[in-house]
Image (cartoon, rainbow over all chains, first blue to last red; front, side, top):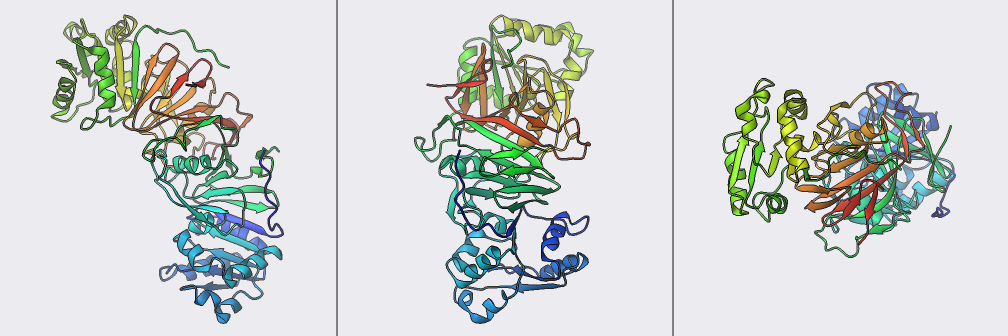
Length: 269
Length: 269
């Protein structure tokens, strides 16, 4: 069994597979709101020009849930990520919510800058870091950047890069069932089964506290554990060959289920 | 370990995930052709009005591979499935190739008729029964008829019906990675883990002889084995709830790999 590296654990991560509900029960946003209470939430639209009305949509949804203070942090480039005014936007903040877009643009523009240091501080001091879609992918140490959806994995298909490392020893994928991404997640974890593959459907999230998470929302979360795999041809095959891998373990979890990332087991009851 | 029921085993099944290649190496059609040699092949387009040129396409492809005798068996309804002239079309035939369409239309129109009896005789006497897409699904005892693609499984989502039973103890799904069907296959096998889930990609096939099969073609074959599952809420949840199931075993196989359906293990080497 792979042991999780001991990372920062004091806060809460809410990792969302994209398209969280804004119109119905808002289960996922409600979970975020329950951690923020009367505090401040920053919507981090790092290098993503979100369409007009995007911030307003989150402000309206969160206002209904009792969170009145929602501001945007838009960072254009690395120069801005070192800007004092931008950093001030993260003062006295209880939650940072990363929007979607392109995970590589997020990490390339803010990785190693004071903005990430501040996000880590917020997390370590008990705050919430949430991310949806690309904002979910970048939570892992090594993040999945690109890979074929709706296809089986061909060795060489997948592109990975260093993520923010908030959730160590995992590779996170999003829009999971909707875009048919089991193949690329298997391909990613086959390259180092130390990493636990976590595939999160739309309108579905994992709420991570300590070594465990629980599932909320309407879809499923897939855990792909290759640590017991008995065979894989990931290194032998040429890059256009379809991957073979034997004895993967797969868990499908839904709302209310809990999982322990150290034992890599669902938590019963 | 679930033992396979002893079914007819003398012939060969070639079960194809749809869209087998006609323009390149024709790996799958070549495999079919290698079993037919100088014999006759019937393209069974049961109740599927295939577009003009469909039969001609198969005739041309098979002619290139040395199979000169390819005829069509089109059966409009159950009355025709009892027709002597239709049955004569299956005399002295080495291979029957079921085209795609709607698996429920195939079984509802020919199930329990002399046409199926003749197909079984051909199989038992050493012939080849091939099927692509819907023609693949209908090979199992209990066949998957409908279910959501590109979504996780909600209890009640999937519809099953009795298949032709050529490959006992399995549930076969096709266009597998391309249409994101892992969710529905997991949902189907969770209802009775005696059945082994077999998900076949496009331009990919399994060649079944005896208790083993081997994989050919460009994609992957997914084996979903729920026999070791430690938990499933398939009976408890209401029909709109997303399924939870723990400890599935998953194998991903590609061209050249072999699998034993009795031991439910990939065959090494």
